[in-house]
Image (cartoon, rainbow, N blue to C red; front, side, top):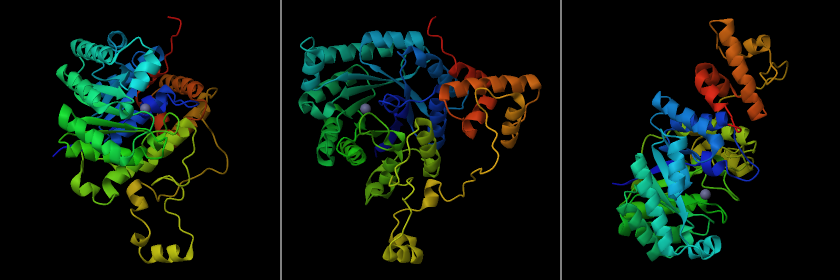
Length: 412
Ligand SMILES: [Zn+2]
């Protein structure tokens, strides 16, 4: 029976959101947390973008070291041969790629302005798939941008051409959040049946339906006999109104009426890390978690009205669909209200030693402590805010990787 897998695109769609961004260390921590959670793949960045190169290579090194394992790290590029070549020049170790090109008439006419036809789009895409294969890509996903506004018979033809050239998955992009759960179910099912490739669901939230559409699209793909790969972002952060929220997708796949009975979530996903990953992304993006966010919002388990409070006290199942413990909530949080020593970009060794001592991180020599402190200073310069405990521990544990993450050489 085909299954649902998750490909988180926070480090690609999330970071390309207007007004938002992440440091390379923050992106790395997100990969670490996604791996801990059991997410199948992280779309970890842009191999044709120069400032990503050190970060991408360092993360692939972490994969090689077994730190980022079993998660797959996939790069995102345009489906043109030139981007494939640049990718393997910049990041020769990369193994997984998604290649993207617009498929709707709206975009073919509106973006390419008469310079490309539908046939040209297919030719460009298959050329890019061939190039990725010959450069050594292990898996290739092909993205149909604006798939929801693309004529389904052309989309089928596009998918079949991708398959013929060795693509592993077809990404159905509801780029403008135009679909609804009924239309996307039908499209995904038709594509799964007629193309015969696993279908990725990439949904945006412009009409508030990203999560519902992703789940429904996944059902369509599975009913059509293929695996479904849902694209998520942490806290739903993404362009405009955002993407399908990772935690809400996990909850919907597990808790929605009859879904889990018929549609299997592949791998062992740890919902227990939901609160941690959501909080980290909120801090890193500097975007608060909405009070009513499913599972992780401050009000997700709050009850005030008489009938509800009475009901939930008698039996939580009366007014809660799932428990807060399942999402890793419920532990008291210690907030410092007195003196605080923080590691920053101008920290000295004494204060730094104190901070790391509290985390039970010790150094063998003063040189080692100084080296880690220097890396922490640089990480602070990039992040513009105090590092979280996990970041400090990461730098202390993998200083050589941290050094690469913090390397920027624009004038090379
Ligand atoms: Zn997107």
